[in-house]
Image (cartoon, rainbow, N blue to C red):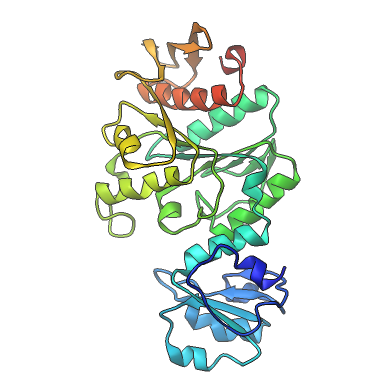
Length: 326
């Protein structure tokens, strides 16, 4: 693909060299670089991609993308025949470049993002299974595994893969004619721009607690929450837990996304009533279509009601009927 096409949508870039050359591939790991590739130097917590620019060029990189605060001495050492692209944020730029390189695959299916401290994995699997029972081909990306239908894909290192890997997975899912893709969206993936450029149709926020407050993740609950709600700036529709004190504030904080609620204690678009919890299951009444129906979940606990309500909200929107959901 031509470099100019890969850079579409990126603002404030500074370029030196030929922008009309064809790029074979994009890499952010120098040892993966082959002849004709573009190498993106990512600033990590422990390693700095700038330290690997020389190796990437030796392996055949024809384009180097780096952050615009790079040491000028490094720039001087880059050969004249190598194009240099400087950007304000290489993580964001890598994500947008990856979307362009794989022809924006997330626009070719319905993309559902599920975030929250707890319940992401369970909720994504519930959504996947309901939609598949309804005859929809579904892709799944998450903590336990990635799937296209019943086919398990190779493991990834993170709950939400790095942007380059994520777009490659999306490309495969689009090729395999997935109609819906449901994915866990971690706070780190939002913080580190892994999902930038993704075309989300629906976002879900299950709940929030202080599990990820630490020096390596989020300094306080406010910063953690502010990071997570970035998902809804990329969504057309959001389903949120009306019983969570933090989550219920989101509609006042995010513009341009329609919000609907699910809950137990507070007024909600989808409300669970008459909850019965046993040692092996939980069941409750909820309005599916025009009728109040009793739904049973084989995982006991009040949290299972919230996860189920989130999944039901999404699946009703995507056309699943009450019998399929039950």
